[in-house]
Length: 553
Image (spheres, rainbow, N blue to C red):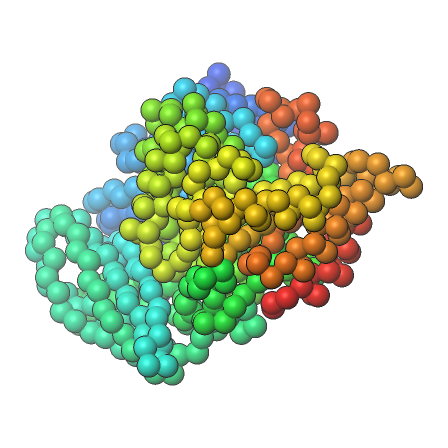
């Protein structure tokens, strides 16, 4: 499944799901499911290195093809019939390749993949989560004409009590001739039609302002969604289309409050990694739904996509269920030395560009985040934080920004984001009073650039091994984890200065052995309130009892 709705009625599209041939760098051959992780193969459980995926396809008529790969870990080179199409770095955003004038018959797609840690990678490093290898998200094959719609952006806003929006469509002409065609936009009963000219081998952006008199707002209780259809017509015939599913809502920061459609919201959620037992991060829809159902069972209304852009299908689920999303770029726990890596700025910029371009239309996304627990204590680090915040605001001024800090009493960047967020593990890494530590932190935030801004506790929690019980409530027991989470929630629910809380974390996840084995039993981050197979721990029921009592929806 590519998305949870059909994005094209005119354009021919299919998913290349199935078994692909995989040849490891040493010549060993395997048959690997796509989407899937290398680690599902018994002989590749811990393989890091280069390999090549192959897939044969059959084309019935001469055409142009567009190939989109939603996620390849971690570096990829795409070929079609041995012709190079695209290079891409980052496992968590998609990329495409276009090939023209493909003749009928059999053809071969080749994807060269490298999931190793290397000197050219600033972001893909041993970390507190596991970066699986392979083609881990869907691969899409589309037939396009000489002109097609590359992307559509939808920005809603209210004026005089009526919903309006800006719709921006990017159109590409890959053919040898100038063209005149008609653009038709349909949304919530409103229609726009315009003739445009587009030069040969060129792109053009068209922008429309649409007033939607009958549109209903998207919110957490009633996540009303609409289909935004953009079509290209020529000589009385539809030649291409692009369908997005959108919601009318506005997100704003007002003083220390986060507002959705003018009403205060308090975020009660989980940090969630894409990781499931023996499957890795290539989660099928059924497991995404299970995660959503379990989070909803506790009373959660929000999820943070730590620490990378998520699969679009999960974001589609959030749109459908009214689950608010904090999505962030792929950068976690980086020292100043790592942030000064020659590829850091470019790789972060590409990730942010792709994340916002590809996920802009999801109404569930209400916050963009960057640089979790990276160096925010130095002037050079501050310059990099500011650069990324500026980049996001250039791409999208409709959502607030934040970054989760752990640089307590040292961070010099709290004045830069719209929302201040901090990670605090009182009771786990430090046996201190949660309330006293929290008050000290909030006082420091108000003096360090965060005064008057919304504040979110972006991480808190404790580790527990599923099934390990101890009457003395020792650390690593389910009882101690439940105690710590309970104490934290009881303190936070009384603090009117907070705009939200996110528990670390929803489910146990695998970590890389390098640098992490000594502090992570089983080579897992065990702070999940369910284990890697989604079996609830004692803390799950504690949260289920407390989340509904916290202010907000």
